Image (tube, rainbow, N blue to C red):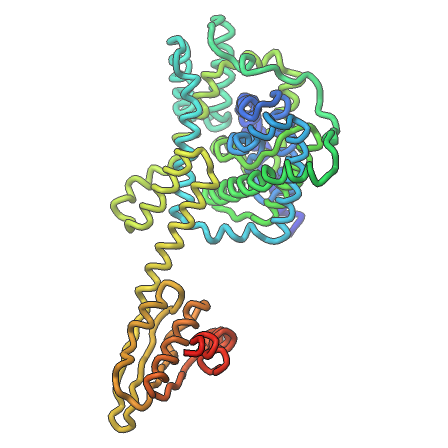
Length: 497
């Protein structure tokens, strides 16, 4: 069974994976160069990283068909480190980032994705679509009309080519777009920006490089404040992208395995003179839309990238940026969840707010981690508020025994604890109070503290208090943290009053 699964991952879609990987490799080149420039390093640092990360995640990643390489989100976090300490410290930080991600995988932190709501994922996707589109604007401002004509023609190829009988289904339209527009640009000798204008391409294969930094605590103090956010943002973007590709391909993936693979890939990148990277939602969607499904597509993307920039650089330099802008606009349009706009009227206000806040924070700060954190925090607050409203306390009076019986229903935790206390009448003259917890659940020490206050207040008024019906989990936390049956603890809390 395992052998069949491996065979399917590598050989189940050879033509689709090879063609899709080629498209991705072409689209990776200008992005890797651009991200290197953002980070303040030589273009080869981003290109070597993209090759290494794609190659390693293809072999051991948890999500077949997902593309990982050097990314803008990671590059932005490196700027200050490179400026203040130079490339060697960046390579050391990349190694430490990888180690932290491997540890995260073994700690099974990938399982934390279950805490990210659908609204946050939608907001994340929409924000990335907007950022991808915005990233293309510099290529479309203060340029000649030829650039606009080439971009529109590229979009025409991308969207209309699949309708051509037979051949339209065989070749991925983004690849056709890049090849045709490059040919047109070279034939007409158009004076427009090309990949060659982005920066110098490397002319040698990467070699093993141990970072030339002293192995001291001082070095650790320098790189750790950068490695931690790099590890967090890298894992966050990778896991979010894996979730999106899961949806697109209707398959499941191993998130903890992906954490380990991303970490090992970053260690490899650091040792080959590359910068830290992670999964790329734009390239992953290009891969899926172009027919890529297996590990072979990711492997081809990494290997072809290296072959093209080292051995075919004279041809690659001729690719007009307008062709790649057209591909990225297609990615932006395909990435954006247009249904989320329609659903604004149908979904609850809380879900819409979570999605909009995630989009706004990501686009405003260009920090994916901050946006997702804001969305998750807001989702947690809305959830806590909603659950707290399902807690109520009813009561009946047993006239025969003179006992007031309170029936507690719902979840008692930090947000419902005050309402729980206010539901009891402490001034009523009764000899005995029974609190029935059969239909209640106590979740935290705030809930236990609230129960302590209720019991102590009733006893102070002279009533005998009995608790009944606790489930096993509630009983455990009440017995462990409750003080209402411990005179010494009550004395400490009361402070001798």
